[in-house]
Length: 123
Image 1 (cartoon, rainbow, N blue to C red):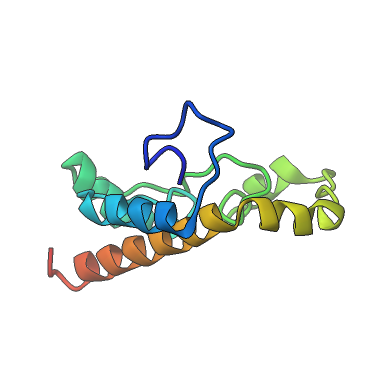
Image 2: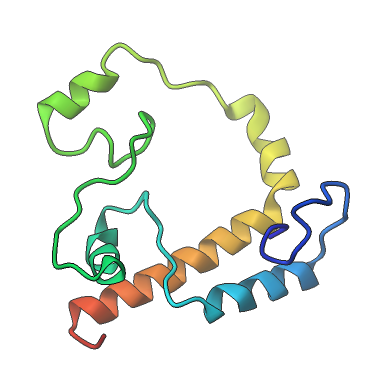
């Protein structure tokens, strides 16, 4: 939210619901909203890049669902790693990032709508 409303260099500025609304307006003004963690980003990314090249799982994050999906080799990359225990921090994180979480949800909605339109040949 902070970056999309021009407050990226002001980390102490208090953000409000109005800032969230303004950031969502910016998202809607963009030609493409890509959610790279989502495996279905491939058609949108192909359209964005001007190619018909399929893109495979994009996220290289070991904890991403897409990273370990598919092959045994991919699963082997994270074998032996334990997921971090984040329960202790989750409540504070969610509270401090509520506006960004809401913005991300809207970005996913925009992304999913665009991918569906591409899949139906509407774009």
